Structure formats: structure tokens, C-alpha cells
Amino acid sequence: MTMLDADQASTLDLDRQVFHSWSAQGTPTAFAVERASGCDVWDEDGTHYLDFSSQLVNTNIGHTHPRVVEAIQRQAAVLPTVAPSTANRTRGLAAERVLAVAGEPFSKVFFTNGGADANENAIRLARLTTGRTKVLSTYRSYHGNTGAAIAATGDWRRVPNEYASGHVHFFGPFAYRSEFWSDSAKQESERALQHLERVVQAEGPASIAALLLETVPGTAGVLVPPPGYLAGVRAICDRWGILLILDEVMSGFGRTGDWFAFQNEQINPTGVVPDLVTFAKGVNSGYVPAGGVLIPPAIAGEFDTRVFPGGLTYSGHPLAMAAIVATIDAMQDEGIVENAAHIGRDVLGPALHALAERHPVIGEVRGLGVFWALDLVTDRATRQPVPVADIVALKSRLLASGLLPFSADNRIHVVPPCIVTEQQVAHAIDLYDAALP
Ligand code: PLP
Image 1 (cartoon, protein in one colour):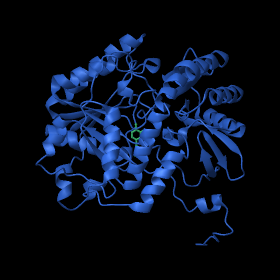
Image 2 (cartoon, rainbow, N blue to C red; image 1 turned 90 degrees about the horizontal axis):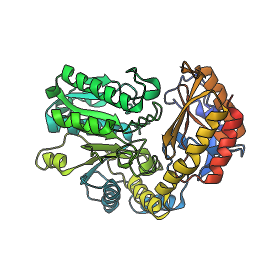
Image 3 (cartoon, rainbow, N blue to C red; image 1 turned 180 degrees about the horizontal axis):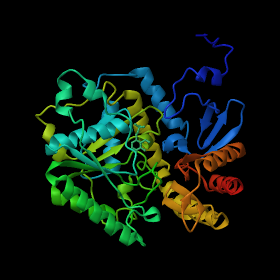
Image 4 (cartoon, protein in one colour; image 1 turned 90 degrees about the vertical axis):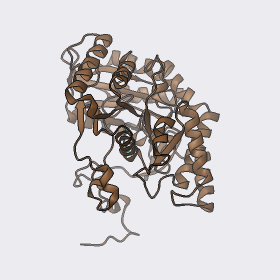
């Protein structure tokens, strides 16, 4: 093995020592980001990019927000880390801020390092509370990348968590690519609910602890649920004593134009309340990794005298907590969630629909707030997804023109920070317009 001379090596040379997420390691990383501010990113050559990816849809407050940076620096000088079992004022304030924006009935927060472990712990809470094992979730979803560590554990902590199986999948609603042959959003909702009810019955309702749903499936394509779906899911859960966990890791903290997607009128007009909510990403825009589970008294109370068999060395890490407090305060003071709603409703949504009129390759535009997907097709009649090579080429054109894009399968996701301005949207639309076939 040849060691690199760190003083001589370029960033991309040094990067070859990094084992990357979700990648074939032989494919070199082509992009070295040096610095960023707001919606702007610069590479090492000083080339500017408009960030319409929010990285992995997490920098909701934008890059290097001064109040968040300063809060992390202040905390680092006083107490950069602390055991999770101690009381810490910054952690308590972070819980208070998160609960304040979540509203009733949530009364406690379990802090994690990110979204996957938030879902792990929400599932654990549901299983322990109900005494059941199965968890139902949709095929079109992403909930994180953990699962084996507790099963591998040798001590007592494994025993209450030994659920090697118990995950069952079903199809959620997606009218544009319906699994149910439906021809309207209403029909899609009714048929998806009927399918879910049948899956619940076939699996044995008394064995199902929880239904885990992304309120708006994100990476799967920004699949805004049709009217009535969430209320129907709640009714099925209530009928069978199943807990409803909403994964708001991507959809939370402003992305949909509300603090949480389940608070959005369009998504949840009847105000259905979940039993548990998971969050991460936008809670502090990822300046320091953090996530968590919102817990209501009915579930938290289960563990007043009974030990909760779950925990993390960095649960409630002071730097992450300081970043949460500053992020939520700044988002409130600067009307950032309101900006996301305004941009989606009045600027970005209409502009993307107009873009679709000019580019037949856009089969469907869907989304809300600063959470949009362009579903690209070879033919609008058949809705055949464009091949991956077309998306790779499109991404290269966008990057070359100065826009940092987000793509998944046959889609471009238009997901800028919640602070994006009308001028930045107009500029980005020009770049998409020029790059799209
Ligand atoms: N849940 C959803 C909806 C996500 O989008 C993600 C990540 O993209 C996760 C969970 C996992 O979060 P993390 O990568 O922080 O573990």
C-alpha cells in the first residue's frame, strides 16, 4: 500500500481512502465541495453551484447559518460532549423547542444520531408497548440503514430486541403509477386503504405492533398522499390496536411548508394524530448529526417504572442539541417555514408545472413546499420511466450549468433549502429549462 503525501495530495486523491455510502467504490468522486453559504456551494476551483439538493434533503435552513454556527461554537467551548444519562440544559431546551413545534399530544423526545436509529427506536417503543412484533411499511419507502447491531449484541440488551423477522410490506397510494388500476386520486386512496386492510387481516392484526409510514414518501418520489389516505390509515390502526409511526425524517422541519408534513392541511385535512413521529435532517439541518422520536404520554408512561431497553452514547449530544435550539429559533424568527410554503405555492410549484408544458419528458410534477419531484418518462402515454443513463447525463448538464441537483431512479427531485428566494428559484428554473431535453 502506498501512503499518500497529505501535503501534496489533492482532495480527490485523499478521498480515495474514504469508503463511500451507497456507491461502487471504483467510481471516483468527481466533486470536492469546499465551502457553502445559504443556497450557495463552491468547489475547490471556486466554481459556484446553486444547491437544489439541500445535500441529502437536509439543509433546510441553508448552509452555515450564522446563528447555528455560533451556537455550536459556544457549546463546544463549554461542554462539547456529555453522557446521555446526565441532565443537560441544552438538551432540555432542544426537547422543549421540538415539542413546541410538534404540538399535542407529544410530551417527550428520545434523541438519536440520525433518522435510521430514530426509526429503530420508534419500532422498539411500539413493540414493547403493544407486546406485538410485526411492523408494516410500504414498498416505496426509505427508513434508514441499520438493524443488525442489536441482534449481534451478546448481553441482556439483545433479549428484549430479538426480532429477526416481522417486517411486512404493502403498497401505498401512488396515483401516477397505480398498483390498483385506479383512475383518480380518490379511487387510489380507497383502493390502497382496502389493500392495507386486507394485508392487516391476512397478517393477523393481533401480531402487528406498528404501521410505519413516511408521511410523504421522499426518496421514493415525493408521493404526496391523496385526500383521505392518512385518516383511513389511522382508522385501520385504531380498529386493530396498531400504533401509527410517521417518519418525518425528510418531510419534517419546513420541507412541506409546515413544521411537520402531518400538520399540513392538504396532506392531513382532518388533523389525524400519529402515535409516534420520527425526525432528523432538518431539525438542525445536519450541522451536527441528530434525530429523534416524539413520544406522547400514553407511550412514555409505559416506561416510567419499566426500563427502556434502548440507548446511544451520543443521545442528546450537546453540539447537536445547541444546533437544534438555534435552528428552530432562527427558523421561527426568520419565517423560514412560511417561506417554504410561499415558495411552493406561489413560485416553485407553478414554475415546475410551466416547465412540464415545455418539456414532454416530464411525465408528472408532484410535491409541495420545497419538496418536489419531476417524474421523467420516455412517453407520456405509457409513462415509461427514462433510463438511468438519461438521468446521469441530465445531472451532468445541470452540474455543468451551476446547479447542484438531486436525483433518484428516473426522477429529478427539486428540493432547495427552505430559505430559497424567488430570484434563486427563477434562476434554477432557467437552468432546468436549458438542461432538460
Ligand atoms: N427516513 C427517511 C424518510 C429518510 O429519508 C432517511 C434518509 O434519507 C432516513 C429515514 C434515514 O436517515 P439517516 O440517514 O439520518 O439515518
